[in-house]
Image (cartoon, rainbow, N blue to C red; front, side, top):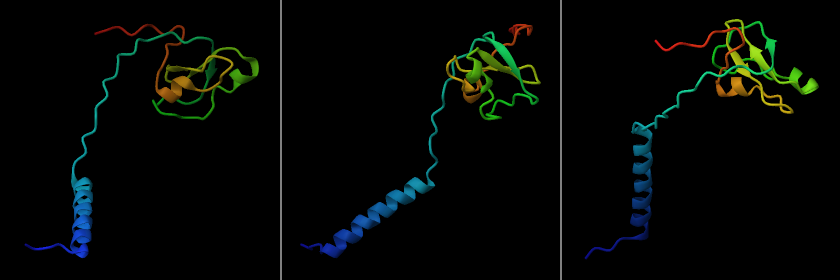
Length: 115
């Protein structure tokens, strides 16, 4: 019967770690897909903060809702392409709608119809 030396055991251990790392590096990761709930369109609440750029479904300008901090009145951001995103409920003044990618319908914009 053959006996294993300490060197063989250490070499086998590091060889196993190398194989595991190699496998993790070359395998194709399975990315879980998120099923998003359908968001119902809601009306924007408060006064508009008009900006001079369109909403591109990304975080655009930091802290656009800052005027809300000063007076504590509810606001929403109104973009040039007709989209709106809601500011956080006072006393907060973060751009919650923009940060989460959730839009609201500004007054005067008709509801989206299913087609």
